[in-house]
Image (tube, rainbow, N blue to C red; front, side):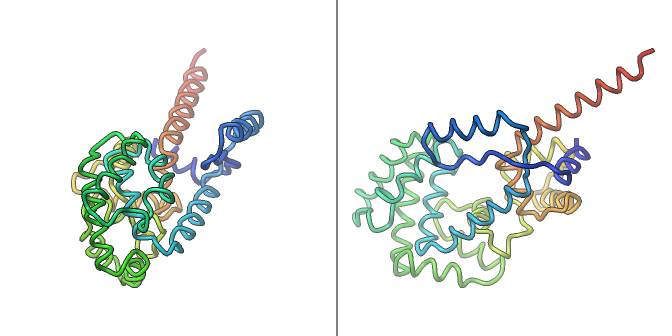
Length: 261
C-alpha cells in the first residue's frame, strides 16, 4: 500500500473536478463534464489551488476572526462546517455580533443550529463568544490579525494562538496551516483521519512527535512537504486509498491468473 501510494503521487495523473460553492445545476454540469471523459486526477495541481486559496485567505483583514469561526465550525466534526461559514458575512462577521455576551452567544448558537453543525454547540458558542472579547481587547479583528501575522517562529505562533478558547494542540497548527504559513510547511496536524491513514501505510508510532516524524519522512519520499501530504490526506485521503485498494486488487488478480497453468 505504501509503495503504491508513492507511485500514485509521483505518476502522471491529470485533470480533477473542482467543486467549490456553486448551485446544483452548475455542479451537475461539472460532474457531467468530468465523468463523461477520461477520469484523471492531478493531485499536485490541486495542491497549487489550495495554496492559492490559502494565500487569498491570508490577505483577509479579519483573518484571525475568520479562522476562529472556522475552528468553531470544524471542532469535533467537519460536517456542515461549510454551511456555518456561509453565514459569515451576514451573521458571524465581527461587527455584526452583539456587544452583549449573552446575546452574542445565543446568535452563534443559533447559527450552529441552523447550519446543522452536529456537535458541542453550547461549548463552541461559548468559546467563540469569549474569543470575541479577547479579540476586541486587542483592538478588534484587524489589529489582532496584524499581531498574528507579525509573530516569528513556530513556537511563538503556537503559544500565541493557544490563548484562544477551543484551540488545542491540533488546531494550534491547523490555523497556521490553513494560511500556508512558511513556518508550518513541514508540519502535519495529527487528527483521526491522518492517524488512520498513517496506520494503513504501516506507520504506527505511539508518540505524536514520532508519528509526525514518520509522516514527514514518508512525505519526502513522495517529493511532498508535510503540509502537502496533510492537505492531500484531508481532502483526498479516502479517494487515494480506494484507488490504491483497487490497484492492489487488480495486481493480485493478474498475478493469480499468471500463475495458473
